[in-house]
Image 1 (cartoon, rainbow, N blue to C red):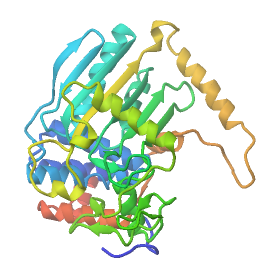
Image 2 (cartoon, rainbow, N blue to C red; image 1 turned 135 degrees about the vertical axis):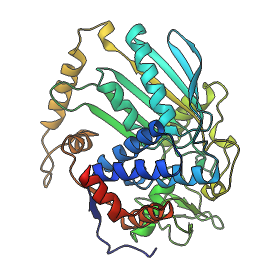
Image 3 (cartoon, rainbow, N blue to C red; image 1 turned 180 degrees about the horizontal axis):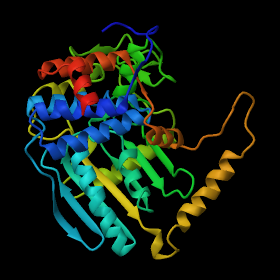
Image 4 (tube, one colour; image 1 turned 60 degrees about the vertical axis):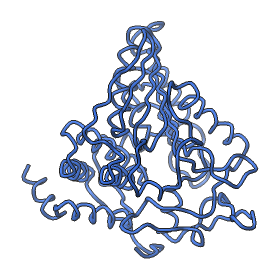
Length: 378
């Protein structure tokens, strides 16, 4: 794949992409239930404009299934629980399936006890975490969720990747207006950001890489990027990444406290092997150490729908703020993605991601044109 600084984004129907994801996974011997859940979660990333957590992340379950690192026959299960908490052991199944299962169970416990916490361990990559907290928001509840990962960032002042490229998401229920959804990462850049910048011929948004020889900071991934054959997102980078501020460093460690430290029998990020190319070979442990989900049902202390009405007041106040020159509309976090999901409008796909995806489709004996015909006919 060549540098894509002048390449145009590809527009594609997200419903068709979701159909393709499921068909590819079925061809790789995933169960119908697991394939459906993974396809939905990956598609959710596409619909919310998170390309590295949409079609870009689809490479990961495919790779891990092929190597046997992901056990496509395993079924996650709740192995321990109390009135307000539970632990899901994924048994090396997909993160999308395991975290979805944990969120559903945690929502049910919160409905009974007002607040509940769910832990997940021994699972593979789970993609965008906004997917899971929106599940609770749709049920009139607040949720926050995070997981850890292989080491993708250096501690503050260091130049060796030790800590996680953690996602963090939170959502509160909306009323007449969309819910507020904060879906961010507890690092300045992760591997997907680096590969996306490289393929578009762009610099990073700041000097977040450190030269391994000189210790000098840089925003240019090109000299350090190591593309892996047949992949558009999964890649190595010889330059460790760094935090932009002590606050992000502290926030990253907060996510590890939840996902690893208090999660029973979960591995912490420094205990997970890296770099990404390590996972091109079969492994006996899953890619991810642990995840934590917290769900709160406010109907235990306020009328049903009141949290949504309060959220609407907050959203209205934010959106009515005086805009800066050249700004047409003030948006809330997650607002555009929520609206895009309602309309199923076409999504932008990076050409490198499309090239990798079509290669995956071909490799399992399918063809994009045939799948498109099947999708239209069905």
